[in-house]
Image (cartoon, rainbow, N blue to C red; front, side, top):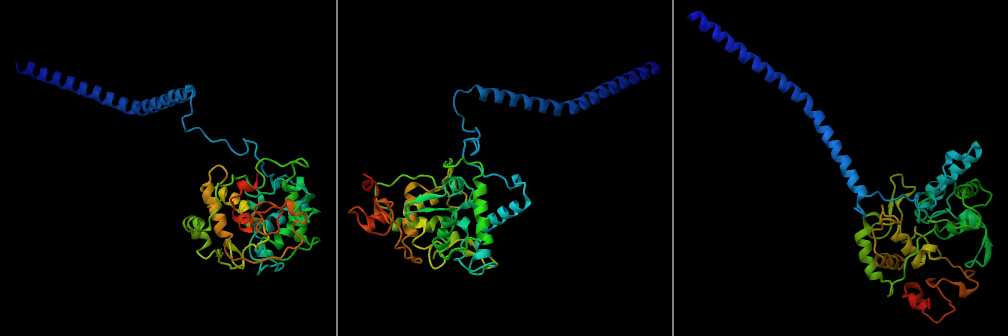
Length: 349
């Protein structure tokens, strides 16, 4: 009797051990399978999600924005495409001069001291390559050309020296100097693939509609305080780099800013430039200023004191003056005040 009970107990124990073994095996298999099942289901969800999106007949908001290149905007060529070593070095030096003009040609310049401390790329962004950043994309293709401001045929040398004398409030570069030849070589290189006489998409500045009212320096002062002052300072004096020989953020008025003969002193040019390039990070796709803010900001900045340059030979044919040229005489009866601040729409009629 006792032997039978012992055998039964042993059988029950073996049965229990067998069940526990099966349970352990099942748990082990589950642990192995679960991650694979998770990733399989995750990928399956992505497949169906992509299929659903592809079948939607409307925009969902998460489609990637086309690039400037895909939309046909001018793109600068690469310096790596230049095979001649000497020419590549000259073009590279030209780019360096556009980028860091003040280091070489500013008040503490290592080559000469002939400008106010601004860099060419303060106006011609990203070394003259940014889409609608006042770039050089079409310069080589459109120069030499007749310019109404001077009433003469101008070449690239003349155009560059206009910037040195006006935007950089300095003196002209010797056209035979290494620096001028390098700048010219760089500008011509940027236009390598642009057909002669053609103005490519995205060059210069993007057009901006006129306001229905005059631009307001008072409203512009508020825009400046909110969106510009942190970099350019409350007094518009900008911010020098630690080395003290160039600006991190350029002065927008005062002794070291552009003079009143510069292109940016025209309200429309400043407004276009600011609208599609400022504050830092803005571009023609993602502006951070409204149209009114851009015009009012231009009115405020250009109402502040800056160097004066006498230009008695400018605009020999006054009928060709732009309507926002801030100084008379004019071929129409509108006041100098309206020519500077607007409203401009009625002047276009």
